[in-house]
Structure formats: structure tokens, C-alpha cells
Image (cartoon, rainbow, N blue to C red; front, side):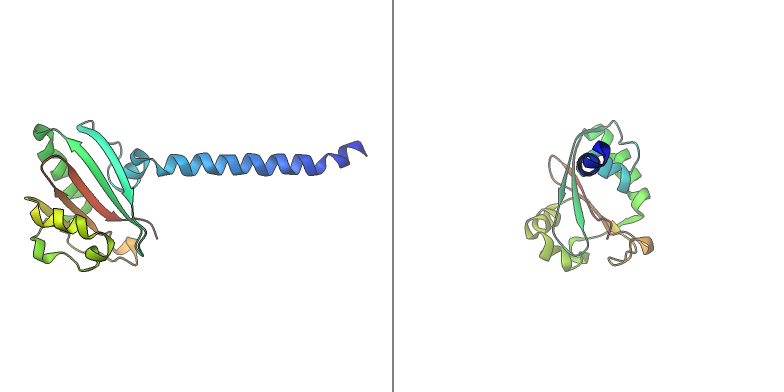
Length: 150
């Protein structure tokens, strides 16, 4: 009978353990490196000095990766990202209108960027048909904007 009295405590302990495991897992998934590896390149190239991720609250679950890269390693990294996301070089006029709704400041940085690549084909509603990727840079950083999992 005494073991049956402790059953709710065992159940509570099991639930707390599951909750802790889920929190650790989501914390790990929220860090920049696992997110970058999941969406773009695995493993993260050593040429990337600093990697940050910013998530937006929008319909297509966008992510903006900010990378600090040496000038010597920038061209090979850009070529690799362009190949992975199947992007093509575009002008600032070819940007889709939904970007202004997500982040108007980012669009201003993109317009000043000397380097803009965007996915050839994409579908915001179905990632399997093509993920939206946008690669651009400013004077110090390289940026990759993409839609995440829906």
C-alpha cells in the first residue's frame, strides 16, 4: 500500500524530468550553430568568426543570420551559400514586398548592399518546394535571411 501512495510523486517526477529534457532540447535548437547547421551548411565553416541569429515573428518563420567573416574567406563562403540555397544575383528592385513588412531597416541595408543574392524559386507556404533565401552584406557582416520551418 505504501508504494501506491507514492505513485503520484513518481508520476510528478517523471513529468518534471520530461519538461526539463524538452527545455534543454529547445534551448539547444535555439542557439545559432544548430539552427545554421539545420538550415544551411553542416558543419559550420571555420571561416565564420561570429555567428548570430535573429528570429522574427512573421507568417513564414524567418531567421536572419549575421556572420563576421574575413575578406579572404568571404568569396568561398558566398559561393557555398549560393550553391546550397540555389540563389542568383539580383538587384534591390527585385526584392519581394513582404520583406518590408518583416523588417524595414533590413531592407534599407539591402538596398545599400554591394552583394545581393536571392533564391531562384521559392514557396513561402511549402519549404519542400523551395526555401526563400536572401544573402546580402554591409561593410562588416554577411547576412543570410531565410524562411524557417512552418
